[in-house]
Structures are given as C-alpha cells and as structure tokens.
Length: 474
Ligand SMILES: [Fe+2]
Ligand SMILES: [Fe+2]
Image (cartoon, rainbow, N blue to C red):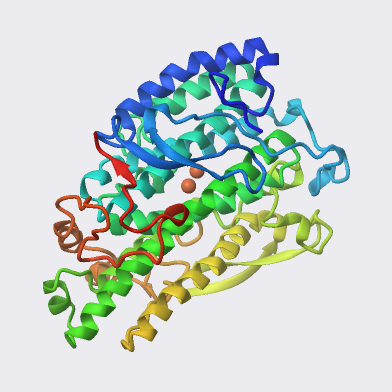
C-alpha cells in the first residue's frame, strides 16, 4: 500500500533514507512552483474528480474523489521487487538485475532517465491552455487526469535521479523544471515535445500517437537490467493506458459526430461539412499525418550505435523482450531498414543490434495501424466512402534515413518544389488549424453537454453518468 500520511507519498520506504527524503522535500516546492506556473491554466481552485493510486496492485486504482490539483498526492511508486529478476538480454544476460547503477553505465543511464523525464512536464506545458476550450466537463476532467499523472511521471524519474545519481542527479532534476516546451533558449529535449498542442483535435492525436510512443519507450525501459528503472516504468505504464484511451476515444468521437452530420445531411464536400460546425474527415487525416510523422521521429535514427550499446549493456530492451524467442544478444541477426537512393526508397538489411530504434518504431506502427483500423470502422459503419490511411514511414520525417528528403504520403520521393506544392494536401495548413480552433473558442462545461463537433462518450468515468459534475469550478 502507499502511505499517504507522508509528505511525499511513496512505497519505497523513503523515511528510512533521511538524506534522500530531504533532497526530495527540497525539490517539492520547486515542483509546485512549476505546477502553478505551467500546469493547467486557471485550474488551481477547481475540484476535479480524479483517480489516485492507493496501491501499485492491479486493483489499486479504486480511489476516485474530488481533489484540487495542487493538492494531488504526487509521489513515488514502484512495482514491488522480484528478488529473482535477472538481466534478460545483452552481455550481462543471466546476472542478477542491478539494484544500484553500474559505474560504467552511470552517465548513459542518467541520460536515458533525463530524456524520458523531460517529456513528462513538457506535455503538461503543451496542454496548459486547453481547459479554456474543452468540449465538455467529462473531457476537461480527463485532460486534468492526464496532466496530474504526467506530473507524477516526472516525480518517478526525479526519484531515480535523486536516489541513484547523487549531485549530478539533483542538478538534472532542477533542469527538468527549468526547460520549457517550445522555448527558444531552453527548449525540451525532443522535437515533438516542443510542438504546440493548440486545439483538442491536436490533443487527442497527441495522446493517441505521442503518449503511445511513451508507452513503447517505457516498455523498453521496463526491460532494463537496472531494476529500479524497470519497476518505476512498470507502474508508469498502468497510468499511460488511460492517456491513450483518452486519445483514441477522443478521435473516435470526433469522427463519429462528423459522420452523423454527413449522413443526416447527405454531405461529402469538406466545405459543406465544415459549414455544419464539425471537422471534415480530410482535416482529421491531415492531423493524423502530422502527429504520426512527428512521433515516428521520437524513436531516433534507423541505424544507431547508441541503441546497440543500450541493448548490449542491458540498459534498454526491446518491446516485450522476455516474450521474444531468440538469443537476446542479437550477435548474428539482421533487420531491414530503408534508405533513399536517388529517387527510390531501398530496403537494406543491417545488423539487428544497430536497428533497434527502427524495430521499436515498427512495433509501434503495428499498434497504431490497429487503432486507425478501429477509427475506420466508425466511418464504414456510417456507410461513408472515406478511407483513413497511415502515411508511408518516410513521410515528413526529420530524423533518420528519411531526413532531408521529401517523401510523399505514399512513399514517393519528391523534389522540394513538388513537396511544397502538395504540403497542405497532406499536413494541416494554417487555414485548417484556424478552422478547427474556430470551433473551440469557448468551453462547454454544463454537466452532460457536449460541443457540437464531438459525440458524447459511451460511458462516464468510474461508472458515473455523463451528466455527473466531473469538475467543480468554485
Ligand atoms: Fe508520462
Ligand atoms: Fe502519458
């Protein structure tokens, strides 16, 4: 169970390590300062119907209640230790999992933890203004739930930095509160986390695509030979599932509403669809293209010696590493990556060890494709002849083998001029964004009411009705 009587709730026996406890209690006010500045705008007095973890067991989510977000009990929760756990891959395979940081991997592990940790506050910053244009009280509550949990994910990484990395770790923990999403001088570390999330369609796309990158990164880190990192990530994954749910169902509900309006009014022309105050499917496709391609970059270069080292040294595994049936060392195996040669995209086999970023990206794409197929079903059930598609892997990429090339949505290699001509056929134009934002100029917060551009969800939170008062504004 988690002890909530402590200043910092935790299940890591924090009270026994006075130095660590003091260090984290010192960081806590800085974190609160960050939350007041960069957390959801104007929300500090709201009482929000939030879930709080009461234990790290699978049924530990039973606790739902009204909470003012600055009073949310952020804390440190790790999955319980498995005494028999081993390093499951790489050159240390078969050794007992490490309970302390091996000296030779110290700076690498710190970098991995900081990079993961940096994404957590970044997404809160990206989403901080969205409350003022929410489509319902239900959705407002959901974005707040995502935000407080991203805050807790930051706590999770900061705990590791403080506990295992001494002074360097403390400095990194402070820097995590100093960077700002999109800031010209001190931006967040990864590209997608410096992009704005200016509207709710972008928010749902972000939680579907980019939080799912989070899931895959956490899954790979959950395999780590460094046991505290593994146990932390395992618990974070239980929270991540809700974020992806918010994204997938959000887009589903937008598509559903658009299809209803198209059907009722026998409309197909996007301009006419827009005139009815809903988002045309073509614009939804362009948002999908943007968020998908920007998120694919997060996996890094297709061929990467860093990725090979992380794996060989037992720091970061593959997706579902222990379920895979091979030698878990990858000294012989190969894996295909793609390269642009002239005006063609060519497949090339490389040592599997160096292609681990690409492999994780491919695992991710598979899961994304299933989600997009579920969105397609909504369109098909409405009998509307429109096909959503996933762009080619090389489309609109800024990192890896496709960077610097102009790849069309179907994988055609284009000149810069040809790309420029079609850019806004494929990506949201300023006019698209302006239109989407024109639907979201105010917030809809009457219990049970939903904005015209989105269908209500199938059910409420924690079996509450749709017209439940999920947020009290005071
Ligand atoms: Fe997170
Ligand atoms: Fe998340």
